[in-house]
Length: 582
Image (cartoon, rainbow, N blue to C red; front, side, top):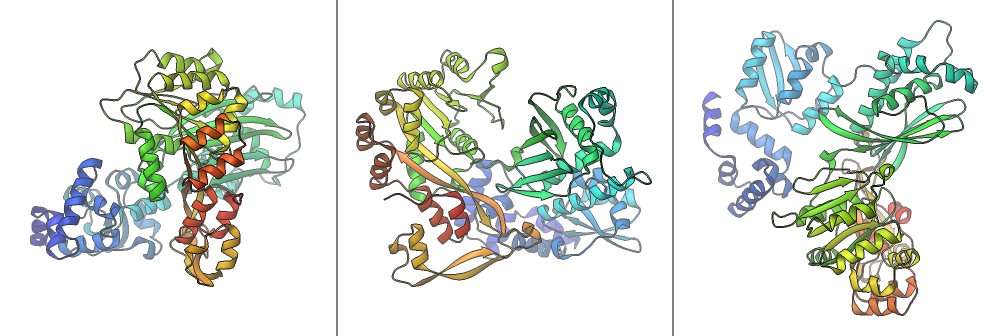
């Protein structure tokens, strides 16, 4: 085995894979280029390009090294005694996990079985002979979170806190009695069980890949919900009697005033969760039965900046790339809150981010930090608004400017002036579709000739849930029904029925049938015909019709394409989009 390991260590992975015919030399060349451009491992590049699956790569590496490959998802439960044999700081630092122990032999699942330093340290630490096996890095990290994360469930913590004869109900306090208990609430917010409950709520949301946490007080209960893939799911919640202590804890963490319960407050938390730093944007709002807390989770590790992976169709991506390469003008991204507008803008900026470009952004808030880009947070409380920040940017010799949102005529006019003077401006609007952005800007008071002179492209988007690949199943559906939704007859080539897909629901997707999201885009490129209609004061319906006739793919059509490709379902198409007007 030692001899095999030496051979693998000396020989490069790419050469080994081409020798046995798993990849071609051309694929290796492209993967090496991907590795160089993105600063990742060769194996990661091969997987990202779709040349090889992670399972095949790990099984191959294991065979070459003489180390068996283990699928932790099929391995079963690991004994608590085995878990206790290796400290948490070691498993997280080295990305490994103990999975079994027989006598003095401890089996360790590792992503890199050639890491002799780790195995030597474990041998000295545990006094056992180390038997390494190879496993997926993702599965190892999932297992670490499962066995080493916050100790105890919500029920366990509540049980520890319960007093004899306590039925868990809360006698409603009068407002003046609550005021007297502020000092006590501050102390309660720092108690160990409350801290553990709050940590459990946060870590549970991060592990579930939620985008938001909702903590909602009602007359007789406290409800906790996670927004996962755009849909709220209720989770195990603490008792009503802990409501004020939990609110105080989150307010202390985000630097808010725990004595103030009459007006909304906004704050921010930056903490390390599951081994990575995550920002939480906190909003506290008084309701009839207490303070409702909503936390937006800003996890930069989930940020996708690759335009090819966001969900663009090839034809719309070509238009998008052409328009963002324009030397000046305005590009608008529209859609409701939580539709992925910021991600699309960040991806565009990342594509345009070269050393010869000066890029400035003004945001509310700065959600993700992008290297090489000057990002500024608005501060309305001191008079630093989008408009004042944008004015300042124009004195900073910018090439590209991103404005978080055009909310009023002042910001809109400054953005237009910037575009007229040779700058590329990217921003967002809250409208239902791309043609509707014209009406929105006109309602703000912006002149039609300024819109036609500066706007280069408008994008509308929605995020569709992706069918879980672990429980995906096909079923037949009539093409007549799909045509009634807006699908073109040409797509079916005369067939009466076609196969679509749906998720049955499994443990991997929490029985929802969905896992992850993909964007559906409506990209309206400004052309002479659309500009003429705007100057003539035509309606949104007429502008939409002209855009469709000149090649624009509507949101409904984009969603149908995702459905027919097997990425999403009929239900998602109906949930996210409206029928196109003839």
